[in-house]
Length: 459
Image 1 (cartoon, rainbow, N blue to C red):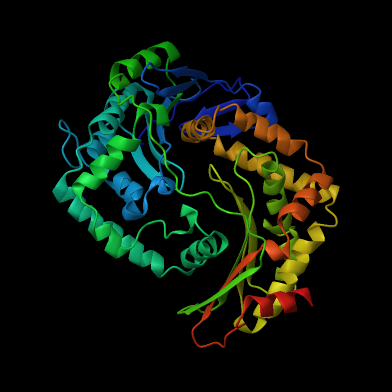
Image 2: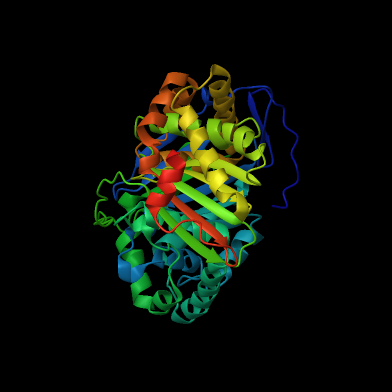
C-alpha cells in the first residue's frame, strides 16, 4: 500500500509489520487468548465489531452482508454477484471509478467477493486514512446508484466470466455434483447465472435486491487495526445511522428433503483427464458434528500424509486427490476431488471409496494430531493480517458471535479419534454419495446406470 515500514518493538506475542503478523513459535490457542474485540448493535440493527490493535499503522474495514446466491429467487439467479460488481461503481458524490481511485490515493485497496450465503466488501488502509476509508465504504453501502450505463457494461463482463467458468472443468464438476446431490435447494443452481438469465436483469432488479437485502439488521461491520475504539464507534454512528433499518424478509427457497440413494452422473467434454467429484450431504457450520468432519477431511485428503494421498495417489491410480468439508450457513457438503487417467477411473473410484470405508473403522492418534495442527496453523495464518482478523470476526459474528470461532478451535483441538470414526460412519456411507465423472469426449462411457457403479464399488 505504499507504506514506509515502521520499526516496532515486539513485546506482544502477536507482532505486526505493515499488514503482516509475525508469530514466534506460538500456537493458535495461545495467540487467541489475547484476541479481543467489542461488539455494539446500533439502533438501526447494524452490528459493529471493533478490534483495537496498535501493533501496526493499518486498519481493515469489512462489510459482511448476509445475502448471497441462496437469497436469489429463480428469476434473479446471479444478481448478488451483479450487485457486487456494481457496489463500488458510483454514488451521488462519487462518480464511476472515484471510489477505487480515492481509496488508492489514500494508500489503500478494496475488493469484494460473493458466495452462497454472504457477500463481503473490504478495504485496508493506513490508519491515518481511516476516516476517509470509512467515508468511502459507508457512501457505497448507503448510496450506490446502480447506473444503467455502468450496469450494461458490467453485465457483459459478468457474462464473459460465466462463459469462462463453463470452460473450467473444476467449476463445472463441482457445481454439477451439487446439482446431483441436492434435489430442490438453491445450491444446485449454476450460481453465477446463465447468459440468458443475466441479460434479463435490469437496473430496477438490482436496485430492488440492493434495497431489499442490504439492510442494517443483516450486516456486520468490522473494523480491525490501529484505531481508537471509542472514536471509531462514534465515526460509525455518524456515518451509518441512516442505513435502512427494516428487517430483511429472508426466503432461501424450499427445504431439502432427505435422501439415501447412491447417485451417479457422467459428463464428457474437452478435458484431458477424467475429473471425479464425490459429495455427501452433511451439516452446516454450527452443527455439533462440523468440527469432526472438518478434521476428518484433513485426515482423508489434505497433504502428502493423508490417507487418500498415500493409498490412492501414491498407488498411481490418480494424478491428484483431495478432500474438503464445505459448510455455508444452512447445509454442509463433504467432498472428494480427483484427477485420473480415463483408463483407471473404475480402479480409482474403488480405491477412493475403500479408503473412505477405512475411516469408518479406525483413525489413529497420529492422524488426528497432524490434522489438528494443520487446522490450527491455517487459522493462525488467517489472522496474520488486519484484513484476516476482520474477516475472521465478520464470518463468525454473522452466524451469532465472533467468539464462536474460538469455541470452534477449542472443539477441534479436543477431538478424539473415535469422534472422527463416528462421523465417518454417520455421513460417508456409499449409499448416500453422489458421484460425478467428467471424462474426455473421446473416451467410452464408464457406466450406464448408477446401479452398475454401485455394484462394482460394492464388489
